[in-house]
Length: 247
Ligand code: SF4
Ligand code: SF4
Image (cartoon, rainbow, N blue to C red):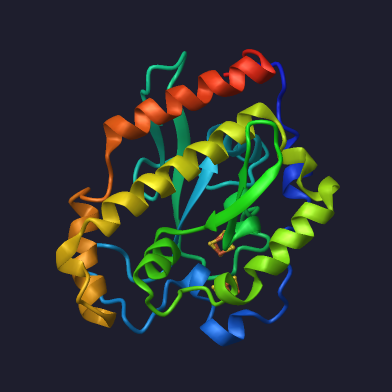
């Protein structure tokens, strides 16, 4: 399906958003390995990383053989019917490469920008950054040892850099990308609210906390899907009012 303002995926993937040489030495490459001293999950994978592709981003990379093939298990499409002209779709991939993806697959935007997910207003002005994974998001909310140390040490640096070097973020300022990123931010906000309502988790710390969290997370306690769908639809209408029909 064609889009009136198609994102330039090649430009999006050719940018260096986060440059921190050797940062994995401090955390043993948590973002790709999933290794964390407090994690001993029963059902969630204990090694590797969950990554997400925007649907059109996946199609672009997969069309060039630079993304994993859909298999319905490790790599699967997720579509959310939210009342728009078509579902909001993305591709979930469980990456077990533990940092060794070079020459195997191209990093999606999610990996290129980790641990900071840009938050834009409807016109494409950078407002803030959100945590790039559910683990970081949870650790920050619960004041646990942050999974990625850059969140604490480099957030302000990247906010300043991205605000000052506008061409770096320019390829993201397409309505379709703004919509995906806004949907992610809506998810983060909704998660924040539900997570902070979880009274039983407040007193738990470390490994005990993460074990209890896993059950709540898998039980979908932290998601209000009706509210999220409503939020997606409202955001789509807001963006279309400004940019015209694009979805
Ligand atoms: S978790 Fe953060 S600090 Fe560690 S390797 Fe990944 S980006 Fe670098
Ligand atoms: S694609 Fe590369 S950067 Fe992304 S999670 Fe896998 S190994 Fe890490």
